[in-house]
Image 1 (tube, rainbow, N blue to C red):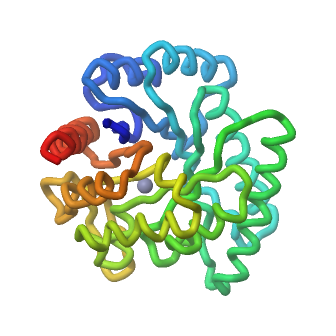
Image 2: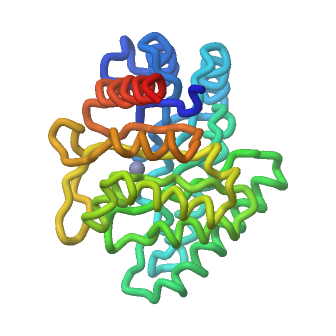
Length: 279
Ligand SMILES: [Zn+2]
């Protein structure tokens, strides 16, 4: 059974036109299943345009998620900057929810030389407030903190899973390229199985049925992630990852963050379908 859906991080490069709706239609046309709306520089939709995006997604059956701005830092040194970051994330989540996105992906912040446990408490506090607010106002969108590829940034696999287990409506974004860049490891079948096992142990077996994953090639150094690469230019072992996901019975959405976007996303989907039929 085809349990994993595949989509691009943003509007595919070959899209005729430049709107999110054009991107959604193109994703469907080339045989992909999902799209992550990139609010990474700014939340570029408003409630009215978000409603139109939702209609296009419903019409095509393309599954949506969104990525909040990169610049937010819930652990900024100045309290005012933390509140601004919280407001930005909250707004990104509301607009994404109106656009029909299931979850809002984000990097919670940086350690700023702080004690990781203390930073965890700070981040959890701000996220809990957002969650309360969403629940109160009827936004069902899930918060998806993402695993980081940078050593200076909050969000190891353990921190991310622990955050999600303490929130009421969260779903982690496991970025396998980041996990690989962070450690220089996690690039073999057994290591991938181990990561999936850790998620299952921490959030329950059902969590494996609806994962949110990021995958791409990656260039990294001793401080972790440097930049995303195509699969061809990188050492990332996506075939073994897909095999590990299939053998774990994993379902959910795989968003490909390669610079050549839909080309690598199509490679992922094709490889996945081939592995499924060869099982
Ligand atoms: Zn990512």
